[in-house]
Amino acid sequence: MNAPVFPLADLAIPAEFLACFDAQRAASRKAPEPSYDERIADLKSLGRLVTDHRAEIVAAIDADYGGRSTFETTFAEIFPVIDGVHDSTKRLKRWMRPRKRHVDQMVFAGASNRLIPQPLGVVGVIVPWNYPLMLSFGPLISIFAAGNRAMVKMSENSRRLAELLIAVSPNYFPADKLAFFEDGGGRGPAFSSLPFDHLIFTGSGATGRAVMANAAKNLTPVTLELGGKSPAIVAPDFPIETAASRILWAKTFNAGQTCLAVDYVFLPKGREEPFVEQCRRLFAKRHPDINGPDFTSIIDQRSYDRLTHALEDARAKGATLIDLAQGQTPAAAKRKLAPHIVLNPTPDMEIMRREIFGPILPVLTYDRPEDAIAAVNAGDRPLAIYPFTRDRAFRDLVISQTLSGGVSVNEAILHVAQHDLPFGGVGGSGMGHYHGREGFETFSKLRPVFQQGSFSSVEMLLQPPYSGFARRMVDFLIWMRG
Image 1 (cartoon, rainbow, N blue to C red):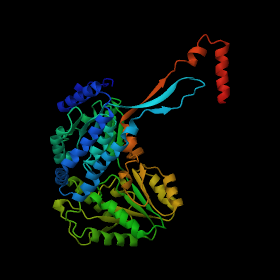
Image 2 (image 1 turned 90 degrees about the vertical axis):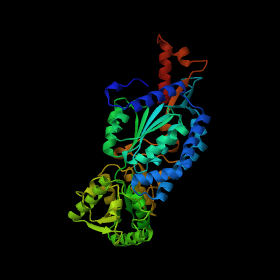
Image 3 (image 1 turned 30 degrees about the vertical axis):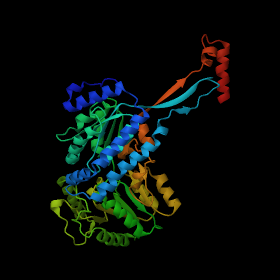
Image 4 (image 1 turned 120 degrees about the vertical axis):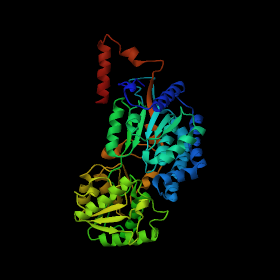
């Protein structure tokens, strides 16, 4: 990679960042293309790290949250990493094969074309706090499958997990292969200013723009996963009880602190009451004690205060708030926040102007599906859209008339768990993909190679001076393609 366009020494970049980056870049250049066996070993080491320290990882994330459901950490973080390693090791040999491409033998007789996937080098990973294991190790699976090295900066809200990974990672990888770093002290801008060969960031749109600006100084390509306001649209034909059950699960999992959570829902006009009643009944059944271990805390006091203020803002502006905890008293000291449905939301309310990232669900209604689609299209393109319908025409209308990072039909969130589907945003919800083959390709250079055979038609037939034959030959080729 060329030197950065500005001196790194002029930036307040921590010495540990610089030393690690220089070591990883030197190691990458010394051994630029790890073998299939080396990559398999790296992937399996990732899996062993997680399985060997599973209990410690769960405890660290629980401590960082101040109360994180053990099941949710296991299901949404531990399992996807182990499953992702398993899937990639099965498919890696096929991904690594050179790929033949067509060559026009009439023009380039005897030549061949192919694409060779090659590692990029050193990849930076900036990890959010909401799924800190999955959103660090998920990219690492793709990064190592592609043969790269990685530096990972954890969130300031994931201090205990970061300390754990920093302590145990050297038992599985040398620092010139993989290194974890704490945040703290606003070190994110310095990290994103390193001249990585690729940088992947997951987080807010505002921070994503800053990350992209820093990366642009080095022409570092970026993958940005930015979330956004992902809607569900329930069709008139779909059972409202089933829709409520599935949407409530998606909205309360991790207390709504999920980039793919249903941010708001469109219901056919007149279906609000049965939807609300089903949500009330199901929440009481699923969470009889909101202060118990199955309902996750809000990550920090600032986020808790933001969410409670957003509820009060909605109430003050005329919305109807429905507390699904039904008389339970959430422990404010534990930052437990009762899920709320918000009826009659308006565009000027905070809950409709930004991603909610908590257990608050605005409910809107529509007369025609085109009205709901128009409302979705009036905002940024979301990370996901969730049509609930058994009508193919309704499903296809929503998919064809909107654009989002991904789609789950008759469910929410679960498309992210499909290893053979790429995951990524579009527009305001991000750019680029990873997971599976697309992840391998994101962190590879698909290097085009043209190889001429012993005979060259250009050398034999199309050399200057461009007299009659060469011109007639080109005219003939144009006529053939006309």
